[in-house]
Image (cartoon, rainbow, N blue to C red):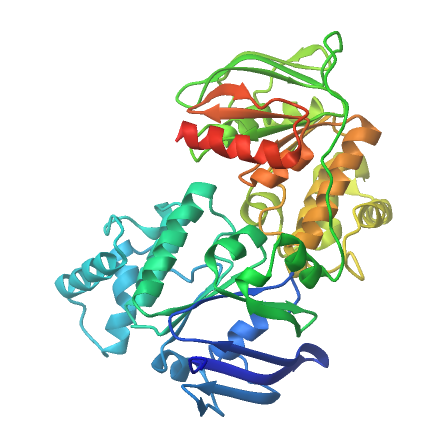
Amino acid sequence: MAEAALVELREISKQFAGVKALGGVSLSIRPGEIHCLAGENGSGKSTLIKVMSGVNRIDGGTVLVDGKEEPALDPRRAIALGIQVIYQDFSLFPNLTVAENLSIGAELREGRRVVSWRRMRAHAEEAVRQLGVALDLDTTVEMLPTAGKQLVAIARALMAQPRLLIMDEPTTALTGREVEVLFGVVREIQARGIAVLFVSHKMREMLDISERLTVLRSGRVVAEGPIRQFDEAAITRAMTGAELDEVAFEGPALAADAVPRLAVSGLSVAGELDDVSFAVGAGEIVGIAGLLGSGRTELALALFGMRPNYAGEIRVDGETVRLDAVRRATEAGIAYVPEDRLTEGLFLPETINRNIVAASLPALSRWGLLRGREADRVAADTIRAMTVATPTGERPVMQLSGGNQQRVLIGRWLLRNPRLLILNGPTVGVDVGSKAGIHRAIRQLAVEKGLGVIMISDDIPELCANCNRILLMHRGRLRGALPSGLPPAEREALLSERLRGLS
């Protein structure tokens, strides 16, 4: 006999301004299980989370907790029933310490009017002890890495004695090692009898962490069952409604006598890079793999003019360049798509059109004034070329999905006709369908335009399927390369083994 559900949703429907976000969704979560909710951006995952946490009132259907109907579920009632949500932004106070973030909820629940720093610290110490991790309670949260913020959010949620912990895309900005740590924490939570709803669109993570899986597409459940019934291909079909069988990239390798798009010799930055030398040919995609702190991002920043005091030689198409400023890098034909598009790449409140033309303003201006019609035409051409899904370029870019935001960012730099494109985490936070589309666009640009591409990623399958060569970095130095010509599965196994050896 199946165990009774802790939370059960029956035929839930929800509309926003006449648009159906959920259409008859049913889902059950059992006590102490790890259940994965999967789906592409726009599938209804976030809406369903907000239904379970009482943020969204349903238009139809039934919500049951412990078998009892909850006709007027709101956030306060959901928390009282033991439902806690950790959203993607963690909802922490960045200017407060770890201890203050961990304790403030308890202080409010207990109706405290006067702060007792001793009591708050005791609460925080207990929260960290329960989680079994090491956190500096006196550090302000804004100084923590993403993984540290994630742990603070989990520890704070556990202080409320949850019975169901909902984690919304918890691994979006984590490295491979940090994901392993997080999974260990999730399993410890499960061992205490707490159910976990793990919301994700990363297939390998779903297969690794969950016991049961529910897949949403266009606001409806299209697949559900024990995780053993699924593999990556089955999940992809359920999420997208199509086959996305990516084959390995076979672009041109760098010929021995060819002038490379980029040649780096003895590149060094004090405390970050040490004697880095490599080359990227026209039409070649070169991957950079490495653990957290390996120097991958520092290499990208040095090549984009953000480490002006570097030593060594950098040549673009055979010509020596001095990249001591971003302007010099862009003039040399180097473009950089950063890892965090939300804080480092996009102007979120601005329109899609303005984001696209942001790096090309001098070419689109006359006497210091932007030629508006020309800028709009160029932006519209880029939207079409990059297949950005939007009815108009006048929408704020913040309203786009992660995949479409990434297309806007790549399209911005392609307007400058770069010779080298550096992609740092090209598909972070992007769903599987958009991910495949971005990969196709990158490959096409490399082959058709002779663009040299550097792809930095924690996603081992992404590197192995899309790169001619993969270089390994560790502590600011290159530590060899993977052999070319291997099938993707063999490359993945070898790269994983090499990375473990560097840890």
